[in-house]
Image (cartoon, rainbow, N blue to C red):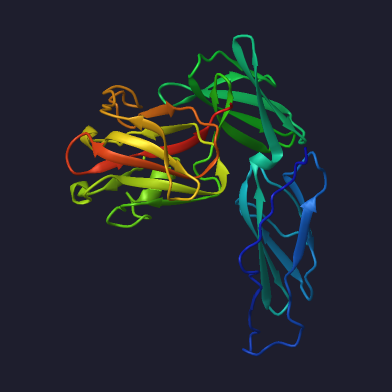
Length: 350
């Protein structure tokens, strides 16, 4: 397995210049330029990066690494303490105060560094990892019913007893000898690791939008933002004149065989009551994968045990990859509003 840093560049190469001498002139010294390259020195430590300064006509270098740390070294070596997206800036100055600036985006992605592995062993699911980085410590955490994560192990392998159809949320945090950390979250079931395809290479659309637009505080994008504290809200659904839906159009066809719904924070009457999940490969001819009718969500569950912001999982048989998936709602509990905190598209191991 090849493990590497995923590197992305800014949409424009922020090659800025500026400054002026005391007399307001252009100065007599050559203007500085700002340029640098970067790379890892040790493949087992992708968090430590050598920055090589190739700027010219400078007397001073000022680095900002996008993680609240800075350096005045000409060509620094910097260790990031976590994964993430970092906007690295280099400002160079000459003795007259003229300056130049260069920015680059560096992304250190957990999924590019570590691969999770799951297998059944007797009555247990055993989860481990494969990585090329040097790991000093492994820590496994499992989500509890109250929404908090409980530390369970420092072993290289996590062992869990899960009944058929049972789900568990967990994560592993790996720490390098230098203290850099990478965290991988996972959803587990009795047969392995669940793949969340909600935001994977697709276009998400809705048939009816929140009155404030998709990016509004309760717009449709809140339905797939991976946060149960936000929600998607539609007004006046009685005026639609029929079912409404949201849809995922995948660039490459995907096999979906489960999904989750998380109820809103209030007003149970706004929950969906009747719905179906449809699939298609041309956007015109649809097959029904799952149908739910006369559903009333429990009044318990969720962080406050009142049935609000509670997540429910629906499984169905499907082994066919489809380009399009559509969740179509034909009725809510009561009233003329619809809301949902979160919706996730899942692929369970076959």
